[in-house]
Length: 362
Image (cartoon, rainbow, N blue to C red; front, side, top):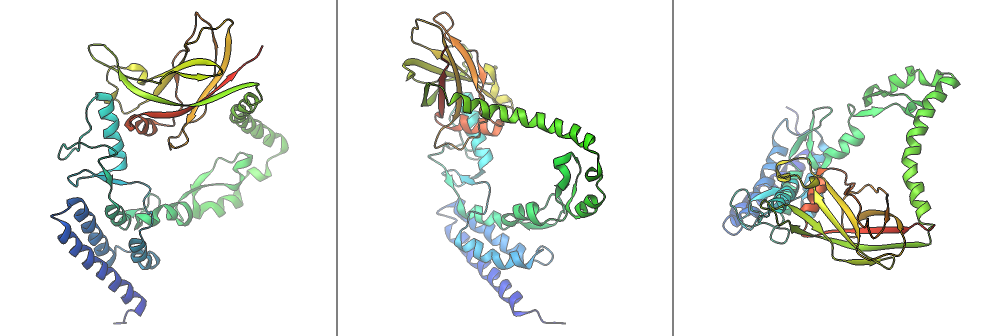
């Protein structure tokens, strides 16, 4: 039987030492902090999977696992939070619990022990995050297993089965397929041999899609040339209606832009009865003019994320003519990307956004 090279023995000893240290730390901290103990225990299990025959798939990531764990790199795309009693919640579940509590007008609680949870009471568990990042996870394309910390790079750059597109997609080739078939397809692709007339039809369709995308940006540039432009940071605060079954809504304090006084209101899922029972969540808002005007006031406006928020909002420009008789817009959608981003806003104590107003001069 051939002896293993020294590099393999060194890697195995490193993982064995890490496992022993993590297991000892888990036992030592079990009484003081069950959350930390769970993190150390997961780390010990992670090193055990590295040593077990058949679970490892790449010597390079085995050699780097010790370094990645010790120096504490940000290896995960998501976080783990823990309550005051040490119970763990992933970031998605944590945000969803806070959003549900906001919709039901309840205090958010840990699903295990029912203690109160909030962004100020809970903190991230870095030990668990580092441990989970070294656990094997299956690639969705080739079904091989890799540490979570390396899985994203593998799926984007290295996997031979990852889905890719033909290099002639710019002239209309719709082919999608595994990366290892890309060379064969491109060699046989018929699009480079199409006639000019055939390509013109394809390019016309692509141009129409591109024009729609550019229309928004051209509109923004046009608005920036207006004489009267104003913007302000707005803070939506949560309130409840006076109905028998109260409904959540948001409203900002009065603010002044373009020498006029305004208020913004927002509601969840267009004020449906039980938005907490719906997985799909949206926010809509309306702009109200509180000042009296002597002539119709035509404005364009849009809401964007605040300077310290990470919520994803696709800008949409709305138009309205304000008068004393018609001083509030209809409710229009807040163009957030999906329900996950909506939950982020609902989970926050207040919603902080930035409003831009452009007065159209006649």
